Length: 90
Image (cartoon, rainbow, N blue to C red; front, side, top):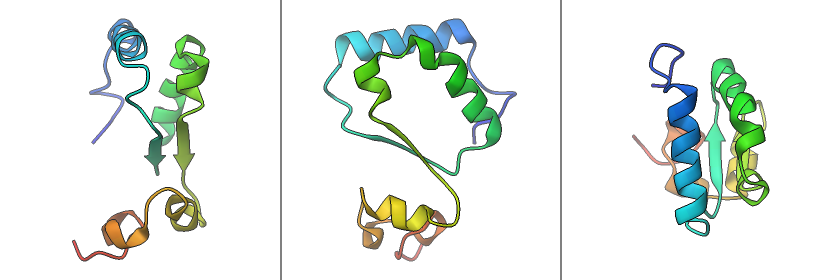
């Protein structure tokens, strides 16, 4: 579980982001973030200015009452466990 207490330092986050963007630019098809806690959103907004525009466009936050419907646009719910809006038994 991600928490404010175990989040990486900003310098480390920027270094990892740089490596992923520069060395593996096309490896990421889509990055779905489901029901992220508020502090993750704060962290993401802090590093967002350093994220390459192409990479940033691949990030999608999913939450709220229509989360399952939004998630189904990317992944069939039959392939996801019920704990994250899917239909599979856990």
